[in-house]
Length: 208
Image (cartoon, rainbow, N blue to C red; front, side, top):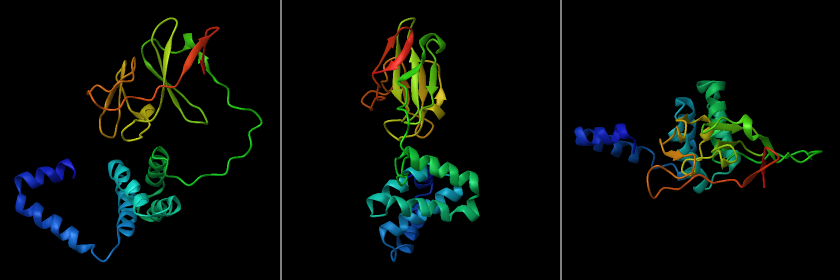
């Protein structure tokens, strides 16, 4: 339940009860898969990121294929327009819900070198673009750095697009905040960032 709906339920319980009852009974003829796919269409049109992150996994769990989920997003194009459709596709990519694309054989493997350590800002977040997935780099000092997977462990959102607080990064979806020197969430008990093993060799930051 959204914060706004929770507020409505608190201050106008009768109105909220009637609203939720109407919604529950108005879709009884639809199976869960169809309902969730329709929600994906509407969330794409509205440009509601939190809603997309809620209903896309539900659609998959209810039996929808990744192709059907993508088609639901594409069906929103006439009303949503290209920018919102592309934003929805980005979210599906974060959630790993896009159909697989056949990859062409690469002549060379991606280099494990992320860059010269001295080129990364000291105690500030930096993001490295990679075909295998962006990485967050946090240079801790003259001789070391932390490297993390870009995905929020809760929402799977790309933290490179999050709010940079210097030594912390905040997820734009549910506002989880993570310490970049340790990867730990500010709130105890919540999942930490996934650290990617890396070392410094001849002044360069290299993935292990």
